[in-house]
Length: 182
Image (cartoon, rainbow, N blue to C red; front, side):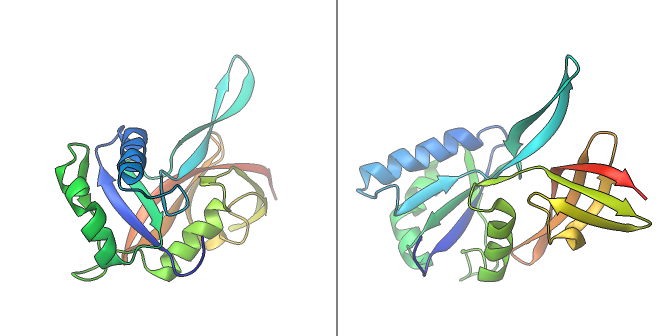
């Protein structure tokens, strides 16, 4: 999307993320917006699991209970166009904000999430190794973001990471395969 653009974050009932994405897209369509003007999405992450001896990665929401809306509408226009929908929806609990006039995700926090998502709206699994206490990621979404990792579970192949949103920290679990420990 061309600059300037904004990301708005909706807190929704857990398990209703896909439904809210579809509802927002339908509502935007009835208001005459195109998919390029309003893009609701739920950031996803890959999760490792074993089934019948075969390893697989399955997608699930990166933040359970959150839906993002990418648009060029400034905060005032967004509230004007979508406020009634947001506040009347049974699945949307509230629009997140960083203060009274700051309903759009700050640019730095948005840029960090965009880096993790790599334009795919999904944090794909990463591969790395551990040397002493230092984690080095050699491939995947976490490459260059080692400082965000707070916990690693090598057996179940995941890492917990901290992501800043509106000045506070949100925790997320992402797939990480540690191939070697030196």
